[in-house]
Length: 409
Image 1: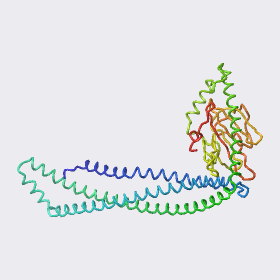
Image 2: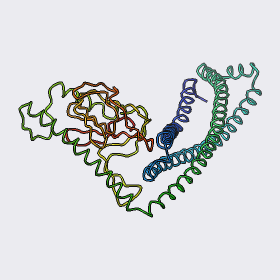
Image 3: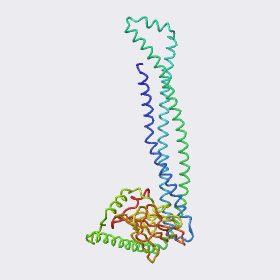
Image 4: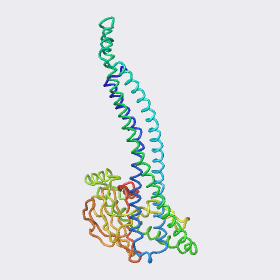
């Protein structure tokens, strides 16, 4: 009963803080999962709009399977994330139910203790009893201690009542939170049920298409190889332009033209440093899009024995979508090959960004551009309705993974 107001207040604050922190990490994890779930939902919506809203009847089986395979992967990720959320909610619900049970027992003990104090206070409620208690002291020091005891006992009664109020409020708050968590879990379960049903339909469609492809696998495998050869031919021309630019920079600086890295002027060094400092923060080369093919070696959804090598990423975007420079720089070159895969290269010091599959150019070689400036339009395939931009990044003559440079690519 020697608990003072300040100590009691500290104890209450400490208890409240512990209750808050115990649920903080789980709450943060739940927020992260919810954010990722919403991102996946937006991506699936974008995929449906950009890849499945075109002239589907004219799209090749190869393209349909590619697009469907991409959508299925996203759908599976969505289901997995939703399951994680539901499981985390289950753990939080069980934890809160345990807390509520403990709080009920604690409240019961607090109320019983408080009731005893009230009865005891009632029996000795007369001021005369308190006065006699003080006057019966053997000396002044004992009287002072008894006075302090009476005061502390009265304070303790008040604080005990306050603690009951706080714990009751905590339990009510947990009950409200528990009801919301149970409701959220039911919503997630219902959404996952719909997602799984849609996934089953997509898997059936994929299985049917793969069955048709297997009947003439050699034909589709040949198409993949032809497309890969065309891509490699364009990539070879891009490397030639970059190597020529490197040789020219070294010649101008009075260095060997055989060097494989750019010789930079002071201004170009600053530009390259700025480009590097924005790694992971560069804007997308299109305002609206989804990544259809990643950087590196990608297994073919048609023929597992084949690997599709990509020096950049392929981004599906809106019809005749505008292409934007991801950073300030100078147009290093413009390519217009016979197959129509028009390309723009922009130099940023010793970095080069590459934009392939354009129908229109808004810039010319040597032009200075700024971040997010429109430099052209993506070709929209008249038969399939698809608009695919191929985007790449080079450091000197070495390819870079765009996903590490572009924000949330």
